[in-house]
Length: 101
Image (cartoon, rainbow, N blue to C red; front, side):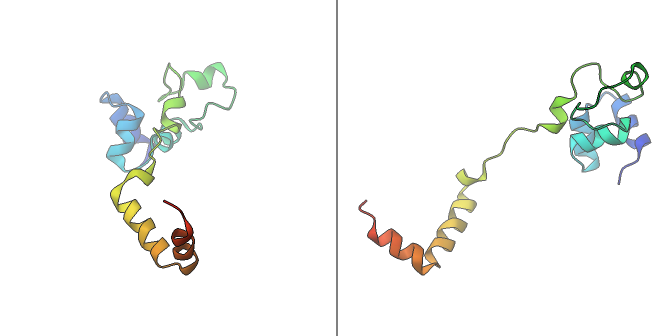
């Protein structure tokens, strides 16, 4: 588990939470939590002191906890795995034979 000082050092070098997390092998939201001691979802109401603690961003912290969606169903390896699973299932084979395509 990375330490607070490791995360803050990377931030001081100019990396954002996503980049720091990638370097440390953790999600960006976890890097934010380690650096600030606060959840990255912004759900808590922060005091003035908390808003100015080390590691806090001046912009929204929403980005670290909402990474871009990755839909694996379009990937060839996933499609091949699904095909193999369906081929190995007698009920699925019967359903496929009954379709009019």
